[in-house]
Structures are given as C-alpha cells and as structure tokens.
Image (cartoon, rainbow, N blue to C red; front, top):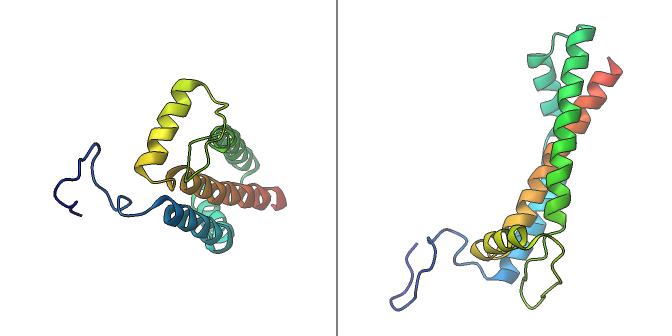
Length: 141
C-alpha cells in the first residue's frame, strides 16, 4: 500500500491504514459475530481431544487441568482488554488502567484504527468457546 506524496508516515503502513475508525469498528463487530457464530469450537475440541488425550482417567484429568489453567489465564487478558479505554472516533473515555498499559493499548488502537483490541477480544472469545467445549467433552467421558 502506498501513501500519497506529502503524507508523513509515523509508523509502518499496513492494510488497516486505509480504514477509518468507523469502518474499523464495524469490521471488528462483524469479525466478533463471525467468531461467535461460525468458529467450530465443538468440532475442534473433539478433534484435539482425540488427538492429544488417551482418555485414561489420569490423562483426562491432566488435560482438563491444562484447559482450566488456560481459561483462567485468558480470562485475565480478556478482563484487561475489556478495560481498554482507548479513544475511538469522538469518544474519549476516562482511562482506568495503569498509564503505561493504557498508553500501549492506545498506540495499538491507533495503528489499527480501533480494530485491534476488539479483534483480539473476539479471538479470545472463540478460543474460550473451544476451551469450554473441550472441558465439557472431558466431563461427559
């Protein structure tokens, strides 16, 4: 992607450069909906459980413990990203995170035109759905 002559480039140009914030927010909402409705969490849970778990009680418990630990860790990241108060469009919410964390999230938001954090949250939700399906699968065995 090329920028017209005279434009100052403060950061690397990427495919999100051409998006305006409103378009990026709309794209993020659509991406979230696709992740919620179309990500094959159950199918992936079944496949990976078959491929990586012997279904012996000890192995099942070990896998379940790993899945639960992963869920807890991702929940921490999800909570942090949910508290992101980066300015988007005309909204300027009051920050609640530590200044260094918020400034880095704001930078990420700016270079993705507001798409970044909502997209990462959508991906985390898809992964959480897979983790939940995996735990349910192990609980039914």
